[in-house]
Image 1 (tube, one colour):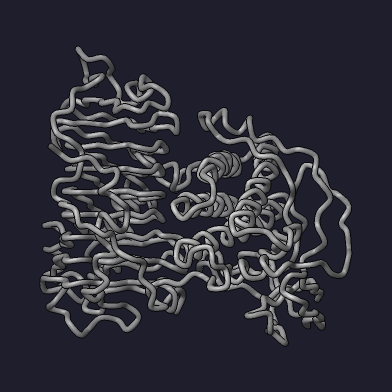
Image 2 (cartoon, helix red, strand yellow):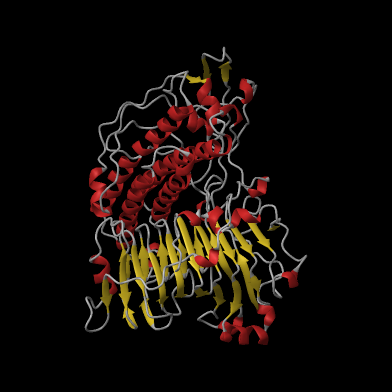
Length: 618
């Protein structure tokens, strides 16, 4: 995917009376877009016009839900996208130039309609004002090209959402075709994972447009990006390249949708005030929750009566997976699985339909669920490696250990992954090395836990709070005496409108006994950092944490060169210990110290609305 250069053609437009339309035309060439991440530097954005397709809400298990997403015959495409200047007060007189473009491919689809070629189209004032909120404004105008001049804010949001939903069925059709034709285990795995991610996106787009649907719509964007990333590693054919290009365009529409929701949340219905999303790096903090909450009281309730038990003999089931399968589909009540003391060597999946499942063990180190999948295995990706992997909403666990014991040659090997909303782990130990805890999506709380690892061992793009949790750095499995550069976190926010990030409150960062022995022998070769930016808008904040001497004085680690250093937000508030206040004044310049005025934004109540859904332990 090599960029090429081309001149921008001339642009003509006419500013009319505000009650009328604004007519624009230009070259179909678009400006080069900002980098999404180092591993997606070649991400292509063609941002074609949208398809008009019906949408079927997802109310089925994932393996059946895709059957309800059927592409319909395409309507003719709207005119090809033009480079449209968004008019601040309708008074722009020129376009920014661009010297770099990305190669274009046709979007994969069940059929290829004829491509109309009108040279201009109308953009109502209401559309232009609403599209001022977006990062990809030409795409926004194209998406809303059929809007009426008197369209309301809710009309425009609904139209954008409908256009976004309509783009998913062709992507599903492509993934199914890839899977059916594949004889390669890695390609089959990528297509299978894409089908899962597309189903999740469909579900997360089911709420109607409102400020409260921002996180759900942001998660839909995450899963589209997940699908794109799955294809990236098997991009050896035109089919996959086209599928990725189609997802590029769909990601742009989803990005615009969440930008508009973020503007609605911040400014209300007055679109004349709407502007692109901002983050803390731009000086913007969302308002904190009106009332504080006793965070010590939140977690997984103690003494829950079990619905089923698991043990080697004399219980309802011998494996945890069997117990999960017995849970009712879409249950509103907790389904409590008491996993009695013992070691359970299995990989456990909690599928989408098994809502509100609760694992209760007999204590950390006594009840142990362990697996050894890793991403170096053919046909296995990081997403698939989790010893316990959760898709369902409402999952909770307490008093047990979950481990991934992949060998010394393994890389990504997840112990616990949650993709569902309202996840709570309380007094749970997570053991691994690289990528131990995959806090993948939606809202999650880890309280009074222990998490051990080496590289990026807390990562993902959810809105997650770790509270009163021990983060323990382990020695590398091969040649640990040679030293290393370890990052505790690697947060993966790809869009500034996503209300996601990793917040650590009252946590402790330290090394295991073995790591500390190595560190004290040769401290100059053992380097631990608070985090590094996996994606462009990475956000991680440490609040009132204790940091041992293994944390480097600069605090944070770059990913590659200057990638994301101007767009990430890495903050600390009142860090203690030799790696915290003992390193005062030595932090890297692109990190921040959170002021007291803003620290409440990162509370459990504010950041994940935990006071509304996390139960009390008693």
